[in-house]
Length: 370
Image (tube, rainbow, N blue to C red):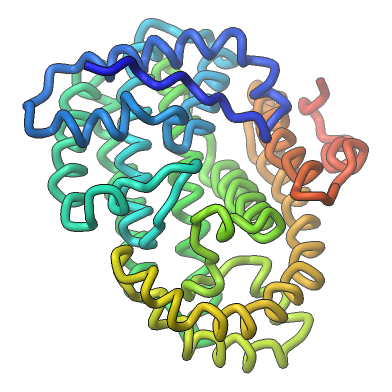
């Protein structure tokens, strides 16, 4: 068996993630060791190793880190948290494989995605096997955790399935589309934070708090994707692929004539967006120049008109998350939301926010002081 890949800790998100690195990396490594040595059928081994052993950055690693931080701040990281951490990390790999298959994403974190490496037909049986492993191990930790974990998958994938069947929507579906997009992020935030609280026998955060945090999570990711041009790194551009984001809607509100340009782009890019991963290279060669020419002015307008509005919304939602949190957890949710807002201070070559602006979002908010 080959040596496990060295952990690639997230560097661009700082704040609390920088502060807890020395403490949490050993916990992450222990969890990866446990996953790497699981007894599994030999037929699964090459697929499992690609996802777990050979992957230097576990998928959606920010959520397990938020899980650990919430646990630590709400009573301490217990033995149950440690046992559940590898289960959560394996669950995040399920989410990543499903996301990449549905979105037909060729690359994630600098390496081919699971469906790009093994084909989209491999995703269903493999994620089904992982789901069974997650359920079995979650039950061993705590029966309550099994219920929460399975509900997370049902709700998340219900929204993702809706999204998959409503790509390239008409304008009448734009707001509904964004709602489904936000709910997926809300489910992730609720899963990470509330499982940590549950294992400390603490009440869950309200849906208002997790919904606001989910919006922060999603909006920051969408802005970063735009300004750091992830499509040049092998990831797909959301707008070209027929998805609706908050920056897009804010740009359309500011410049209604942009809608006609968007729909014209989609008449061409639909062929690329609905192609399999295997067929994307051919479609990019055939349509790439036309799509780029039509997409460039739209993306420029989104950056000019949509991004500034979204930055304002991020600060508003940071405050809303903390306001909706119980007083005992307000410092925790402030630390988490400000860490995500802080990511916008290093967004490509731009600094969209200052440290003072982030701090001002929490002015006069009782219980949120450092």
